[in-house]
Image (cartoon, rainbow, N blue to C red):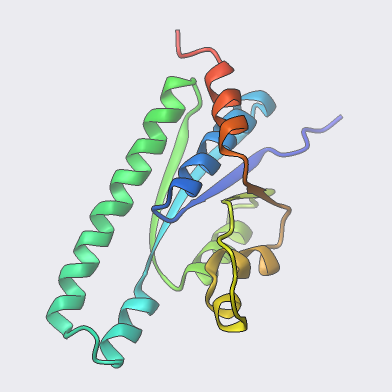
Length: 165
């Protein structure tokens, strides 16, 4: 019998929900003996839109981008530490571009067979739905998608894994 999932990608967006999703992905990777990748995409498209709308000046966009890239690295490093604590190596990937395009491309290029996302925020309008990156990823991913919603259950599952010896 083959493993149900051998290459898992968890998408981080800087939210608590995405860290919870990473914890769930670590549990899955450990129990399934799967490879785990954590990915953060710096949304340059959104930044460019803010400049075009004259909400940001070019110099402000550059400064904000540096801040977001620093945040991305901090989240990736945090997930790497969580994985090490549970003896699960985590490959870290930081990209820039349009989020759903970068994620879909990575899923295809690296033969990822499960995408793990944090809980999707409530959508209040059709506009919200069109702008929701996780929603786009769910609809366009070429593989199964796991949406992690229950923080307490995930925390309990994560804590029940023995720590690194």
